[in-house]
Image (cartoon, rainbow, N blue to C red; front, side, top):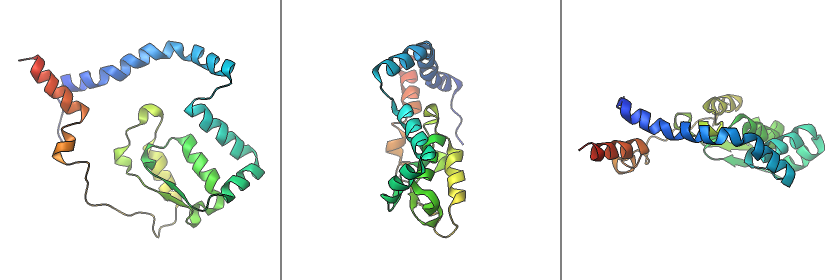
Length: 164
C-alpha cells in the first residue's frame, strides 16, 4: 500500500475541515429558514419519508405494493436512514428477491454525508445466501489514466510545481 507524503494528506484534509468551520455556526439559522419556508432538504425529506412509512402501515403497504423490484446502485454510500427506507419499501419481500443492490463497501466515499459501509454489510447479511454476492474481477475505474485524476495526485503535482 502506497503511503502518501504527510504534506499531501494535510493539504487534502484542510478543505473539509475549513468548510465545516464555516458552515457549522449557520446550522440553527438554516434550520429556522427551512421551517419558516416549510421546506425540506435531502436529509429532512428522507427522515420524513421514513417516519411516514414506519408509522403508517397502510401507507407503507400501498407504496411497497407498487414496487415489484427495487434496485439500489452504489449501496456502499447508503446511510442508516436510507437503508431503513429500503427495508420499509421492500417489507417482508426484502429477503425474497425484491431488492437488488450494487456496491463495494471498500469504495464508500460519502462518509461526510453519513454514508456508512457497515450498512452495506448488514443489509448483505440479511439477504439469502444464494445470489447474495457476485464479484466483478475487472476494475475499470483503476486504470492509470483515471487514477491520475484523483485529488491526491492533483495535489501532489501542484505541490511539485509550487516547490520548484
